[in-house]
Length: 241
Image 1 (spheres, rainbow, N blue to C red):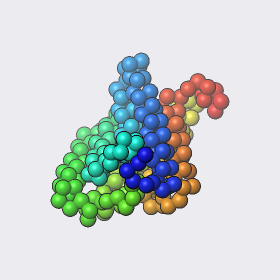
Image 2 (image 1 turned 135 degrees about the horizontal axis):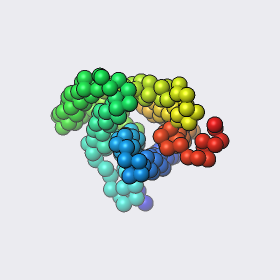
Image 3 (image 1 turned 90 degrees about the vertical axis):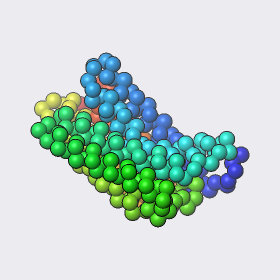
């Protein structure tokens, strides 16, 4: 069926990557669709943001699907899918974040991160076509990417930025007098702590089928909790409040 033989870990990784990406698209699009109901711009940004932060797993899901047609996705394309959206999504989230908080610092914060993101994107494409193996990375096996320092540290920088701002935002909701906002804040805190932990585990500790499955299931839970943090279904609200 495949042009290459896959190990159990690779089959599990590809399958669960695909499930997580599908769930992330559903969550992102459902949040985005709330714009048409409430006409609040942040629903568009937040929906796109969650879809965007699933892209480090999206290239693996796409590569897995294409293997059924005996098509091997080029490593350069996989690194593009896994990297280029993250700086853009970080800026998009910061626009949303500063719409709610630190509005007086909006221009400076968004401007600085726009410049940083642009520089990272330019360097990424330069290294991708001039010294990919040493500066960007390579794949040891079908789904096992080895990231070089440029990608590793810039992705970590954007992850830390997102984590800190998400926690600040979610904590402000948690401290609200409104029980519903408090609950949403708690869901957002849990969602992004799980996501950040999974991102780290995925980068350093994916060496067994058990860890692959556990990390992907936790990622799926983080997507669901993220949805609850923005669109709190009545059934969930009644149960937890």
